Length: 244
Image (cartoon, rainbow, N blue to C red; front, side):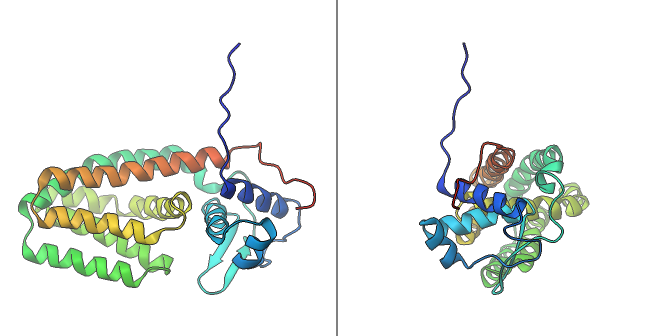
């Protein structure tokens, strides 16, 4: 007899499941404010990073709204099914597949053909991304500008055209992938920024192979994050124990 493999749950997954259950049962009503990260950490007896990771996952799945400097609120209305984000799961995967091939090529060509002005523009965007840490909307817009900037540094009109034609899909893909990234990587926006810096450094050094590898690895890691949270979001085994 074949047995189904049991995947050990991380603390953040357990916390996520319990908070989600409390929202579903009405303990926290739509539009209500959740306790602070500090209070939740004390209640669950876990670290604050575990709470932030769980809340980031709930936000990615549409259950809560995290307002910068204002706290975390239950979504109003609540999602009608398991995470609207994953209704587009296959579409997201397809966009990521296209991105991996196009953007790795763009990065390689950019390393070969970039001008000092191109590198300067990319580093300016990196500074904008650093200043925007903590501001989700500005960070997402800077992220899109960054990837388009690399396409422009390729000096290939077809590459540029393909990236520009994907702009709308990129906005959806990057918005989702950034949220999922922050969940899987314990909300490390700085780590995401460093990956962007590494890509620019390879382009600046005119290392075509390294630039393509770093871009491909960056997008591949996001693929893994999307697949991981998609599995977590459909895990029906998460149950809140009595007294939670």
